[in-house]
Length: 247
Image (spheres, rainbow, N blue to C red):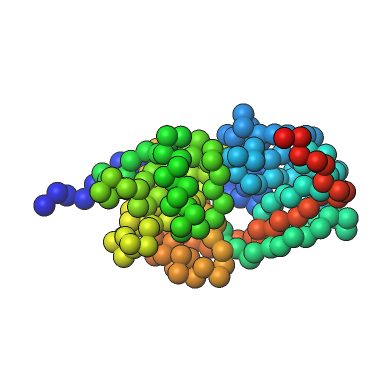
């Protein structure tokens, strides 16, 4: 019997400041992901083909909202996380109650079957994401780094990876398994493997989930994640009529 791999990536000696998780997209876009960021003053966002999230330096500052409107343009759809209160002239398109969990106690463990995924794997990733709907995933999301997959018969059947990276933290996202391969513990293995990638960088894993997805939340808690906050994922529209698409 082949012994199960043991983690070679211990938890950081000190847990990084958790306050950055109150505004994780802003912390990531002005930190490790700054080279990717589209930014205007007190607002920033990921490129639309990378991730849907935008961020405000201070959700209580009207200047941040004005800068985001200028960055996104009139009549644009914007996705935010946290509990921001949009100005009256912004349209609320929808919101989902979520949970944020941190993984200081998660046992990270590399997995011998987990393979790194990159741009060449995007068509296969997108088919799995469209089937399982683990959350937003764009054509270039995989370029954020740390995405791993498990294959069976040459076909990608399970996926997980790192998305937002506030300083000291890695957000585990896109955890999904093909329906034909559920019940084999693939999601558990991949979450631990992605956590090991984070730990190798000296970072702590965290994640978001819809509050109503109690099965997933229970799985994460069994793995050692603990509830930290209850953010909202919110889609809003900037003021004004949308401009014509130049394409």
